[in-house]
Picture 1 (cartoon, one colour):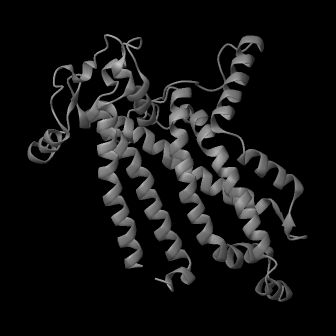
Picture 2 (picture 1 turned 30 degrees about the vertical axis):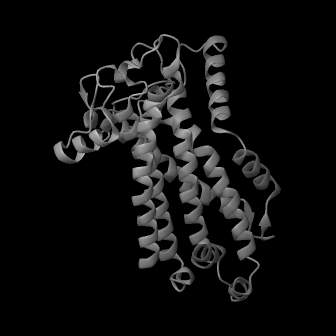
Picture 3 (picture 1 turned 60 degrees about the vertical axis):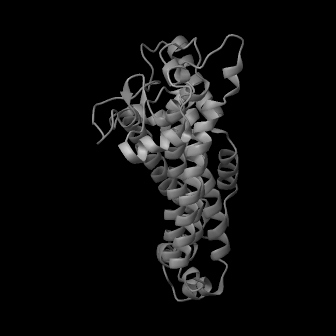
Length: 321
């Protein structure tokens, strides 16, 4: 167990500085800087400072940089927590909904996956998040324009403050529904499909037959016997699903104008002079380096947590450590 923790921590320690360096130099040498007559405005005032100078400011002065006169920590903290809450809610929906749908997809009588359950989970797990989001937006817009609705069913942009979330500029309200749908549906159905397959295989093992012959109730067989043995691969799968969720964060936040770190990251990479409000973020080396570290840390830490949880859940994995 300790060797496994050490390996994961080493991976984090190695990759976080790499992400920081790559983000910084990507911004410094972005191809769009070489347009005719172009000048990177974010480097104009201090084009000669190096990555070493930047590190000295961080470690000696605690200065992580400024963007447009705003302190870096203040600038990224609220978008980070906005995205973090969205990710946490998405992984909770993925875990709970995926496992429940996976169990419902298996018939307790035949001990096989139901055809309808197989069709829904396979098809749903193949739908890209951006396509699902586009379909949802198209339906809402159509109903609003041609269905006589005075307003959309659900808010299609921004976030609300009805029930404020801690450290965040957003609240826990119906603004969350559409971004969560785009983020969670695909990984949830993928988890459901894998859970159903694992459960179907587990139900044909001898110890399940023995439990059934003794008259054990199905709910006990499912949750006490089968679930315990398939829990570890499901937890590992949830860790993998978190990567899809973080990757889909960029699309979901752009589609629904969610003020999170993914949307912020896109502005820092692709904004140009035509987007005056966001151009101060475009290709800012310190900003892109910071955002790259934050997004990478979410994925690496989630992988560590999922791996540790899997080893704690399955004694057979602990025996090999």
